[in-house]
Length: 241
Image 1 (tube, rainbow, N blue to C red):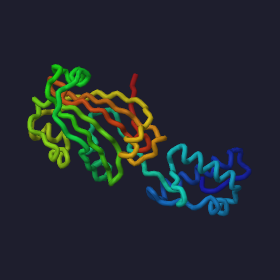
Image 2 (cartoon, rainbow, N blue to C red; image 1 turned 45 degrees about the vertical axis):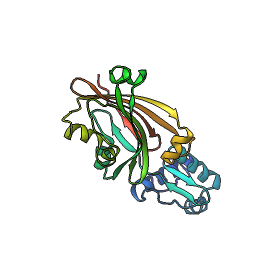
Image 3 (cartoon, helix red, strand yellow; image 1 turned 180 degrees about the vertical axis):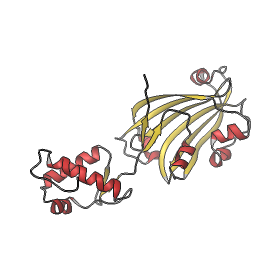
Image 4 (tube, rainbow, N blue to C red; image 1 turned 90 degrees about the horizontal axis):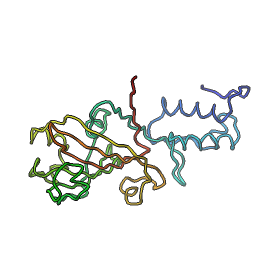
């Protein structure tokens, strides 16, 4: 739809939404500013109420975001993650033409508590790496990850290694450890203040909590808890009968 049809049974605000979505997807770039409500009213000969309803619905659906005192902008496109095969953040961002960066927020070697040892299938008190990373793409924080890795399988990993080399690349190239499969559990959660600050997002927005267990040939080699921005990712699963 490219124009408003006032004789149509389709509500005017829905027609306007279709027009604006088409413009954003085909003519506008991410973070580009939309015309003001007044300009849209004049352009399409619509009331302020109709335009505001369309804008509010577009914001709810994640197509746009508002900056107080500045205006309304096109939201960055969500990463469409296919859940049909093993994937890594670094490789997926590269496929999309984005520049991935991992900022290591903390790095320790600890004794595994009961929960961690149960996940990694190691004895209580076993040495494990524990590190938190902020995963960034094109300077936009996307995910906050806390990972646990058995120390005995991968001795000598440093914070600097993780800042310059993808974890799975370290597994493969330095330790000749291939990943055979991964299990993931997804849960919608409210983003707390600390997470929201690190991810540079409003705490009112929801996130996805993702628990991942990564397997090598005969052992669990990684347990990771991830907070993924709900406004940056969508996941696709194919179900066959």
